[in-house]
Each structure stands twice: as C-alpha cells, then as structure tokens.
Image (cartoon, rainbow, N blue to C red; front, side, top):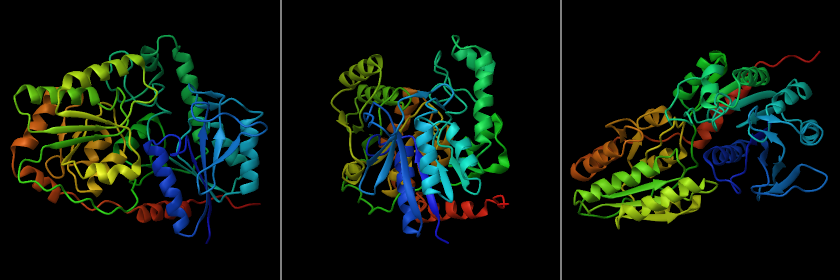
Length: 417
C-alpha cells in the first residue's frame, strides 16, 4: 500500500541544523525510498525567514519541502495563537494533501492545536508523535534542569515548576499541563528514542502502552579510517552547538587541568558555533578558550557533509552534556566512524554508550572527573582499541523507517460510518 505521509518538525535542517530537524528530514527521505509519498513541513519564524504576504507557507529545499512561517506562538503553552491565519492555512494543507499518516516531531512553532485540528479534519489518519526532548513536561526549554541552581530534575509538578519560575503561578502550570495533555490525547502512538525519555513521559502521565521505543538512525556513510600513528591516541573532538547545557565549559576546564599536569601530548578540537546564546555565555566561552592553552582549537561551525573529514583527525569524541540528553546524533555519528566516546553517564547518553565497552562515562559538569577519564584515555595503551572493538553495528536508517511504517500499520483507526 502506498502511504501518504506528512512529516512535521519545528524547523528545517537547511535553516537550523539541530538533531531533531536532521533526523526528521533524513527519515522523510527513507520513507520515500520505501515507496511512500511524503511531504516535509518545517516551521520557522523571523529568526530565519520573513513572512510572505497572504500565506503562512513558503518553499525550501531541493525536495520541495514546505515551511510554515509561525511568528505568533505562545512558548509557555506550546500553543499556536494565530487561529485565523496559521491554523487556517494548516487546515487547508491537511484537507488538500489528505495524508494517511501525520508524523509530528515537535510542537514548538507548530502548536499543540495542530494535533486536535488533524484529528478533527482527518479522523481516519494515523497521528504519531516522536518525543525528542522534554518540552511538554518542562517550560525551561525542555531541559528538565532548574534555571536557579542548574540542577537536573526528574519530574514536574505545578509547585516545583513555580519554584523554578516564581513569576508564574502554580495554577498556570497546572492549566498548562492539562492543556497539553488534552491535545496530546489526539495522538495515536508516541515514539521514544530512549528508555530514559519514555520513563520520564510515563511518570508525567502519558499512557505507557502508547509509547513505543524506536532508536534513531543515521544514513549510511563510508567509514573514515583511523589516523595513522605510532604514538598515543591523544586527539579528542567535540561536535555540536555550543551552549550552557552541552558541557563545553567543563570540557575546556578539563583540558586546562590536563595541560597543567605537564601533559601536552594531546589535542582537543572543538567543532561547533554558539548561535543565539547569551552575552554572558559567549563571554565565558571566549575566556575559557583563551585560558585553555595551545592544545585546544576552536574550529568553529561545520556542515554535516564536512563531518567525515573532521572525524579523520579524531581518536575520541567527547560529549559532556549536563542535561538529560535523549538520543544525540553525534553519538551515532561517532560510532558510525568507529570512534569511542567519553560522555556524561546520564539520560540517553548512558544508554547509547556502554561504560568500558564502547566508551567511558563521567560525572556531568565535573571537570576533574572528565580530566581523569581523558588522562585514562591517554595513559592506558590498550584501552582505545578495546573500546573500538566493542562498538556495535549501528541501526540502519532503512530499518528505522521500516519500524515506523510497521507502527503506522499497527494503529487501529476508527471505521468510517
């Protein structure tokens, strides 16, 4: 059966190359390769595009993807407040395209109302939502990290959330939760890429029988050879955006500690930029780079197609995030190229990277423990090869798409009267 699928994300990888957008777009292509008719819809706003007169829609990409310009959005409720413009245009799209399956990857900029709108206009369509982070649970950008003391939390309640945001009353957090759960009830099945994330949503109140675990996957790539060396495997690399939650500041402190020990036989390459970050963070970042020494290089932003060339110079990939990462694409990309990882031993990172098997775990936000693990990587001659040998074959994107398609077929939809 030829399926007609509408894939929805909160941005487009050509405009904002975040992990959710990249995976959703790659999965769209995998659906097409399995014979499906697929339309990709990414939302955007004035950060990346200006509106076009008369319609919320724009076009982008060689595949003829759609952009939804969504400049009127309530981030607290994840609500699309432009009922007479944006929602009406979305209604027109749904009724004209008439997908069999709506696979939504985020509510930001799209709005929770899109779920109820889809169910009302297309009662026979399957609605599936992949949970990539904790936005519905946590108002703090879906991080589940307290903005006051930067400590990770394990659950939400109106009282606890009011403690994080004293200017917002507990009653408003209660109404937010009920609003979102009411609209999420329109979803037939949820997908969680990690067991950790699934458990967070079960504890929040989503029905466990409606949440399927399907790991993300990356398109097949030729494996980049390991660099030729007779010395130590001392080249470390960081890949991804730089922000307060990715742990780059503790990483730079760890590099400084290693250098202070007199061990200059290592290199740390930081690949990534710091778009849309606060002046306070970018200032702290610049000071940390200035004080890290000559063994650290900030290589700047990169394109995904540059990754193999950049990975060729790296022995170890370091991902020291301090929040509950779900299923970082960087981990799968490192494993594709058979590079062991040093990661914070929390959340989805601890699931994907097995301590002592294909990588090392460290305490999040602890530069001393991170420096210890990096020194161990430098000093134990056989460790690198042992961990490389432990890297398992990564899930294929075609297999990942196939599991999603099987899930779509498994959804029991109401019979039309």
